[in-house]
Length: 469
Image (cartoon, rainbow, N blue to C red):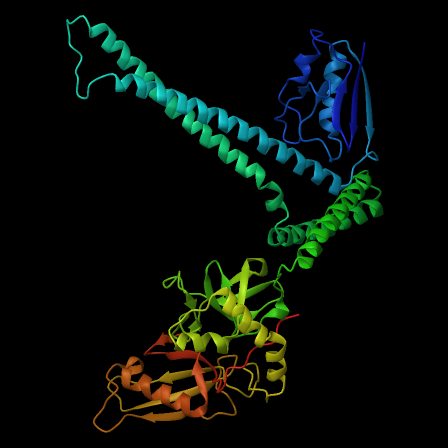
């Protein structure tokens, strides 16, 4: 008797030619097959043969196939192995089959839920019918001729109520399973999830292409396996790209870097966040954990001691955009816009127009300009009336274009706390404001070494930043 082990991409790994009681099942049922060595072959009444779970639309698991063939031959069976990777179905066909099976599962689980709910209601009605025949508060009369019947009624009520509760839980379970199966297609084809899936698939494709090129160059046996992986990934990527195109045709908005400029507000997880930076794959938004969740989170809310807290979010998590000017007008009226109002404001002031307006305005001084000091250092003795402010360059050395300045305390005032004296720090802030600078961090240091803080040119007018490409 010959047992055939056949693997194709379209059907998976199948085992034909076995008979009931021929001892082949002892080898097939061992749970050490599959990618992780934890699966057993299963019998399918529909196929009329054994199959390896999760082997369809995948490359042959040669380890499991060879292991099974070795065991069957050791049990005096004649075994033939056939592997044909060319017989495959497209990813679109496989996805359609999965969707169809999910719909069948949903229908089947709905039936299970209905049966369980019916059983629960029947058991509850039986318990209620028995209980209705007992006067309210009637105890069991010990020694009376009715004692036996009363105890049996109590036991039946308890049994039926427990069955009713158990079946109600079972009905909820199957109803949840049915709803999950019914949402399969919606979940799989969700545009935002699909974009995230495509990101991972493209990265995996690049990886497999590198592996294939290396295997071909060095003559490794894995070249064919990597070539098949590349073919599979390209097929899957093409399918999901088609899903995205269909979503765009239906009018679904998929946010991109070109849709935002710095200063806009992005609607993420039920709140509006001001955009601090536009990145190729993410948005850097204003973030302050102590205030979250907040209906509108501005840069001012996220700023402390010159530092701005930010958090990155993927474009697939963004649900709406509102121009910064429109949002601040709403906030001035103590209102928060909804998505519909924000969409109208966004259409009236698209990001492209804001970038053009930015390009037409004069450039502001950049922090990277070597002529601009990067830090300031303040030195002061205890109880002194004078302090020294030194402008520092990017190497924390005195800036050659900016001479140190002396800060004199007002008449009758002493810097009793050395560099940490509030009057001194207030005068330093005034001096920086006069020179057109602002703090961008916290003071560090000590009275003995002086204190240092990073600075940057003050923005006289907040200009939106162009989207990163």
